[in-house]
Image 1 (spheres, one colour):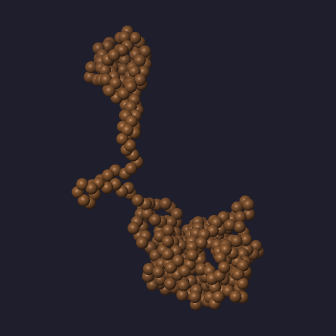
Image 2 (cartoon, rainbow, N blue to C red):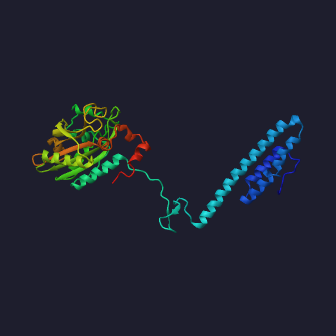
Image 3 (cartoon, helix red, strand yellow):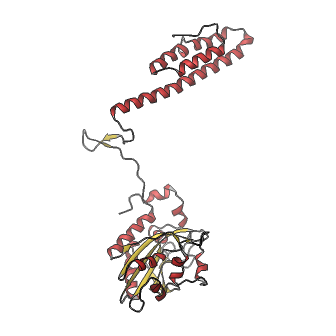
Length: 362
């Protein structure tokens, strides 16, 4: 070893010199030579450790601890310096070849001599996304256009324009998240009905998927953040028969099976008349369970004829035009299709749950 410290130096001085020599090694070859000279079979530190056995018995414990601490410190310094030099050498080699380490590695392809990039594990679409996209495809094929709106809404768009004035009891059932500036997190996608009517003249057919928020008590069938699909049709001569035909077509396609449905009167301030379209619970075959609240039916699709006041708020003459609107909870549609019995699974981020839908999207 070159420039070895004199043997008569103190142990601390020799340790500092050795560590400095390791830290200043210019390349891997110099570091390797230094490693052998210090820690090899005949290295200085190795001989120092062996020499402990030749000391008087009473001096051996302290000398042994000091020698071992020195050996560990030098081994750690050598390993750290080697990592730095190896990284520098690799960076230099890659920069000279133009190789991109972020590119996927190549593996043998289907034909001899052909190399193809290795595919990384891919993610999967969320089941709500899968069903939403299928619904959008279905309704766009029926002449609907996809519209969107803000998730933070004004009181006018979310309530007033939808025939829900400030003193209306329907506001209490919405369990609303209000903001400090007087706006709110939208409780339904229905505000986009007003925005669409103000933007486009009749005839009008729009579909509005989106996220909504209500201060619900979370259980197997309720969430504070949920997804809806809103639909609106406005034209001359639109009737309840048009509504029923559209809803039957929707359910037959999206649920991929025949289901028993019932249409019963329902009150919603923005439609008149209003209906509740329910489907027979597939989890209990109508016998009653926690998902259907032991009723045997799952409310899936409120709908009805657009109230004249709503048409007026959208700038449309109710004496000339009529329309129907509907809204469905996307989570409930997904639960019916795939047999999911707890709505909380959608928001849990459990990859074991989501991986079941790999390859489901058409």
